[in-house]
Amino acid sequence: MSEPGGLLAFLVISLVFPVAWHQLKPSQSDYSGELYPLTAIVRFLYFAGIPYLAVLLGLLTLEQLGLTGLVYFNLIDWQANLFLEFQQAATLLLLSWLLDSGRAIVAGGSALLLLGAFRWGLGQAGVRWQLRDLSLVDIIYLALHWAFYRAIFWAATGDLYLGVVLGSAAVMLEWALLTKMQHQPLLSQTSLLDIVILVLTATAFFFSPNLWLLLPFQWGMVALLARPPYVLDYSR
Image (cartoon, rainbow, N blue to C red):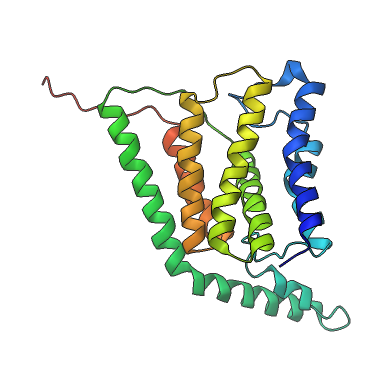
């Protein structure tokens, strides 16, 4: 297990920063449009820079973030033939993905099917929701951000299950803090759908902790909810 003090510090920073930014930029805080209305540089530093710093400090591993296979690039001998070294590292990376692909397809595919059935049921019940078409960059940032919270608790407890459960709870706490700051209802239709995606992706990660392979399924979930529901017309 990693140093709990350092992990707690990163957790607090990650939770507090969006709230502080909301205070600094209240006019840009459109939670329904983007999770965090930051500039491109600040968003990159927040979503990608903070997890990377935690890895550099040895608090987290790339595997705990779900970035399986990247560790092979750390084994590159910079004094040797770089082309051959990168080729070998890439081969090992792809082999690790291949070994994980079976579980990832089953876990991610099942989560996607469940969301599809849930979406279809809402449509047949006449429920409408606010469509949100997130960009691919937003989806990658969210996937990495959620993985970061899971990794913190996985590293702290040494238990993947606790990491998934407590990490998801931390994401919900962050959402609650933001909605409180923005004076919005704690449980809105949009937030409930976000929770569904969060729980499904977290469950898939528990059975296959490979973020690379699960990312397409998370994109598919977002794409499902970005389209209006299809309702069968029984009157014909």
